[in-house]
Length: 145
Image 1 (cartoon, one colour):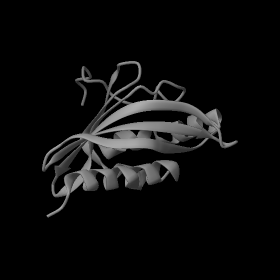
Image 2: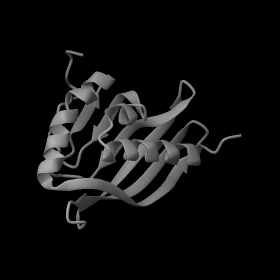
Image 3: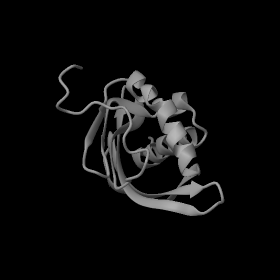
């Protein structure tokens, strides 16, 4: 039998590798939709489809490069709750500058679920506030979707 915590962490690590290499397919493959995020400024962000995430991908990449970002590291990962089909991971992430210095460390909570036989993140909440915060998303009150 598989271990839900290990599978959630493996899903996260695949997402992070995709994020750091700016591989939009790898990132989207580790998400479940609709995908929700509670931002560092307490906005609920909703991406209903992979296309919604991809619409903001190039903008996010440009903003990251403008910050001097080269990668994001995970300094700490721990499962704080888990069941057979859901795992809550708490993490400390660090944005790393092109000169190798950490320039933005933040806490985050990710909720992974097993849906359709695969693990992926469904909801994230972070304390990240920076230039990449305002990217294309719809809100819960957006009734056009």
